[in-house]
Image (tube, rainbow, N blue to C red; front, top):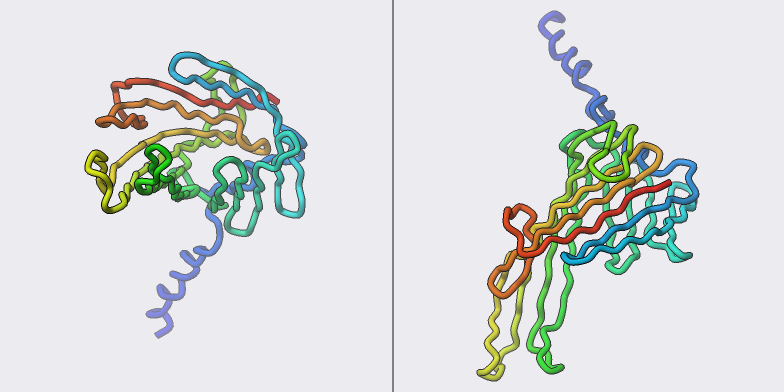
Amino acid sequence: MLKNWTPFILIPLLFGCGNSHSDRSTDMKDYFPTNISQKNFLQINHNGNTSNKKTYTEILNESNNTLIYQINTTTIKTITIQDNEIIENNSEENPHTKHMKRYIGLGSKLFTLTQNIEENILFENIVLGKKNINSTKICHLESKITKLDNYTIPYSGDILKFKCIEKKTIVTNIKDDLPEYIDLKDGTVESDYDISYFYMKKGIGVIVRIDNNCYINKGEISTIDDTSKSCEKQTYNRHFYLN
């Protein structure tokens, strides 16, 4: 009778490691700064006509399991390392919180960020209605590389490449009983489809951010569609780690 039960005893032994982190998983904690007090960056912006460059410095402080990032004495974000996730509280112009997975494999999702921005629709300082901009940004681990030389500054080492896709939808709600000469209606419009990338190096953190934008016209609205082969205007925002 014991022989008949043997296969069922072996199954938990073979597959009972579901609570542990497998060899294919990457611990994202290793890809945040270690023993670094500051990071210098070059930022390049192109608005479709002209480019401008500037350098800036991130100052890093650590308190318990939290990294504190500052620029010009102003805290821009904090990173808290937990057992199964990494939490980023961003306090820049558009405050938000990211819940990132700590252990991920190739092709896995690092985080999903959803946001809603509400704006008034104005005409000569009169509120005609409201516009809600809903966005969802999803970032995946696309590949592991040892060299990045697509741009002027080359990088090498243990590097993770992430691809992010952000989709936006605009929902318009117009007030009732508006004058006849105001031709506005309720509606939902698919807006931006924005593809961007960022790269993280082991022990350093983010080293490169790339956001190249292709603008197209949808009726009277100019939106980002990075899948389009024909662009009305092209812009970019790029950040490069210097030292």
